[in-house]
Each structure stands twice: as structure tokens, then as C-alpha cells.
Image (cartoon, rainbow, N blue to C red; front, side, top):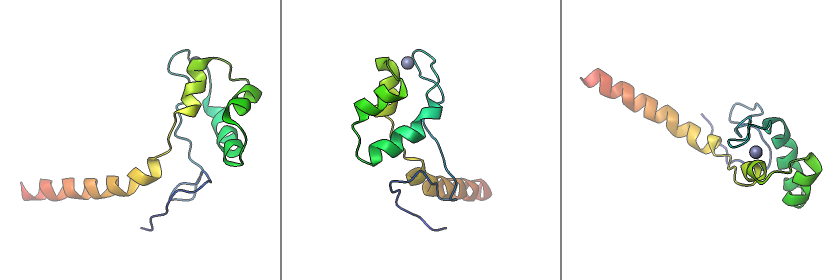
Length: 95
Ligand SMILES: [Zn+2]
């Protein structure tokens, strides 16, 4: 299994686009998952995050924090998940 360092694109280890931001805002329940890819792309190109959120129509601060504080770490955790699973199986065999 080849491990890649996550770059600016939103591709996972298997090459598919992943979206790990919650679908809805934790506080108000507003739909935000569909706007995250555009937010990430535009901020990656150097636009101001606050202006991008204004432009996308994200007005409430509860929803804005969902975008600003989100960190995509799924590709960094995934390789370890597999080894933890294998270790768990070894432990079951030993018992
Ligand atoms: Zn909200």
C-alpha cells in the first residue's frame, strides 16, 4: 500500500474524492457538506476564507466555524487503521 502525503487536492489513497466534513452544522443543522469542496478549492487558490464563506452564503458563525476549523486527516489515519486491525487479529489468534 502506497502512502501519499495529502496535498492540495481532495483525493484519498484510493484516488476517489472524499469529503470528511460533517454534512450538517452541529449547532443549527444547516446543510454545509455540499459547499466544502468549493470552499477548500477556492481557499487553496489563495482567496480569503471569510470572503469565500460570505460568497457561498454561509452567514451564521456556527456554520462558519465548521469550515474554518475542519482538518482533513483521514488519509493520515487510514494506513494505521489497517495495522491496528492486523494487530487485533494477531491478538485474537494468540488467545
Ligand atoms: Zn450552523
